[in-house]
Structure formats: C-alpha cells, structure tokens
Image 1 (cartoon, helix red, strand yellow):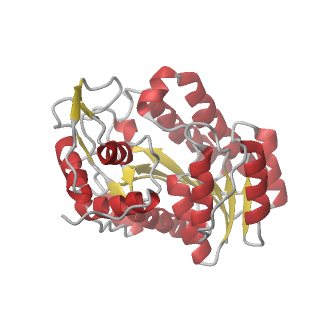
Image 2: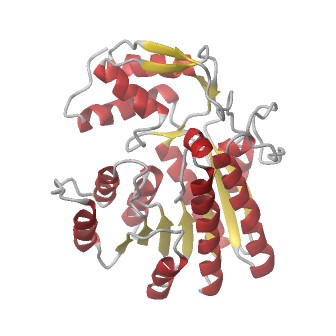
Amino acid sequence: MTYLVTGGSGFIGSHLIERLLNMGHNVINVDNFDDYYDYKIKISNTLESLGESAEFSFKNKTEDLSALKGHVNSERYQLYTCDIRNKEELSHVFKNHPIDIVVHLAALAGVRPSIEDPISYAHTNIIGSLNLWELCKEYGVSKVVNASSSSVYGNNQKVPFSEFDNVDTPISPYAATKKSGEILSHVYYKLYGMSMIHLRFFTVYGPRQRPDLAIHKFTSLIHRGAPVPFYGDGTTSRDYTYIEDIIEGILKALDYIAQEKHVFEIINLGESHTVSLKEMLSSIESALGQSAETLPLPIPKGDVNRTNADISKAKRILKYAPGTKFQNGIKIFVEWFLKKSGQVPQDN
C-alpha cells in the first residue's frame, strides 16, 4: 500500500510513518516545516521515523530542507516540503505518485494561539483540507483518514463525550476549524463516494511531543527549575492518550477503511480515563525526581474544563484497545526527554 501522510514530520505523523515503513508500506510525507515551532525538531522527527540517529549538520532552513530531502528520499519513502494551502504545489504529489489512502494530520494546532490568529487557522485547517479533498477527487483517491480533535466538544456537560453528542458550540477557532473539516468532508462522501474516517484525538502525549504542549512544557520547566504556569485550582482534567495507543487506533482505522466501501465515520480515540492538572503535575514530578514551583494563573479563554472520551464506538468498529496507563506513559516520556537532554532519569 502507498500512504500519503500530511504532517508526517510532526509528533503523531512521524510515529505513524515509522510504523507504516516497518510494516513494509510505501509512504509519501507532505510537511511544510513551518515556524509554529523550531523546524529542526521536525527534521529530527523525520530522521527518527526512518530509524536514523545520525547527527544532522544544520546551516539554515532552506539548505537544511534541501539536504534532508536529498538524504531521505528513497524507493519507499518520499518527502515533499510543501504547504497544503497551496493546491498547485500539492497537486505535484498526486501527479507523481499512485496513492491508496490519505492520512491527513497536517494542521495549525493549539486552542490558545487560534484565538490570537483565527484567519491563519481557517486558511490551513479549512482551505488546506479542502485542497486535499479536491485533489483526492481529481485523482481518484477514494479513502481518507483525517485527524479531528476532542476540542470540538467544547465544554460538553455530558460525560463521557460521545460521537453522537451535539458539537455545534465550539469555544475556540481551532475547534471550529476541526468541526468544519468534518462537515465539509461529508460533501465529498455524499457527492463523490469518498470514504472518510475522522478520528477525534484526545490529548496525545509521549516521545516527540511538541514542546509547546503541557506535558512537554511542564517537564522542561521543572527540569530547569523554572516556575510552571498552573491554571485554575488544578481540578481541570484531560483524557490523556499515549502516542502508541493513538497509532494503533490510526492503523486499525486504515485497515477498516481499506476493507470497507463508502464509509463515513467519526470516532473518538482516547483512554477513557481522566487525569486532573494536579495529578498530571505530580506524575511528572515523580518521574523526574524533582519538585515543581508553580505560578498560579487564571484559566485561559478557550480552554475546556475537562475532556473524557467514550471509546465504545472505537472498540466496536476498530477493536481499539488502549493499554498504556498514564503514570507509565509519563515515565516513558520523561526517560525520552532526559535522553534528548543528554541525561539519565533519577531514581525515585
């Protein structure tokens, strides 16, 4: 099988590509290496996904990306450093390769930044996705697995969150763009027979997690002895999902969509267990063997009070079975973080 993975040099994408290649598939990675965070992290992710640990000689972004493409492109792996907002540029990928299934992970992520710059989020997450659906239609690619988000549920009062709950009241532009992607894709399902599976991810964490996300950010701050921003009274909670459980869910969705015809499904991928902010911080402290200095702050606009996934549909349709307990996942993440920092974990 040949998979086109957008955002394949990001956190989730690099893990997925690593698994797909190890399973013997062909992969086309489309990633624009934008400046949302340091592009060097994405280069590192790319090399790790290909099983390479060699040091990369960084110069400047243009030269680095050119050197990376020249180094990694092979018979089974192709890297395109293009932007999904540019349909003409993206069309070259479809012209040059037969594609069996698209996995659409590329997006501008983050609730709080989307409030500051909603236009950019709309351009990337809505127009970029539409460009992809249009090219799938034009080139006869009929199967797409798309990354949605638990943020579409907003401050849902019903717990756990079900795919059948009303999600017409998002509280951030990011959430609204993710819901828009689900709605717009339904047009392509009805008019053109494209099969679509939207996976609503619940707070993914683990090795290679973006440095701006809470677990990575808190770990870094505690490790450096810097104050940790602590929003509210610590009772807000999230359904944290370990990266390997998410990858298993994506792979099962790929198997399902490959076998079935004319599919349109929205499916939660979470752990179905909530962890409070207090518990999350305590787990990181324990894994690091360090205490945190906290900086109390009000809960930011756009943040939801809790997320909690009903994964009964994922279990029924995909045979999804997450197996990583939060404390174990945190230990693995901290070990990875310390190794990247050139240190070893402290004994607790």
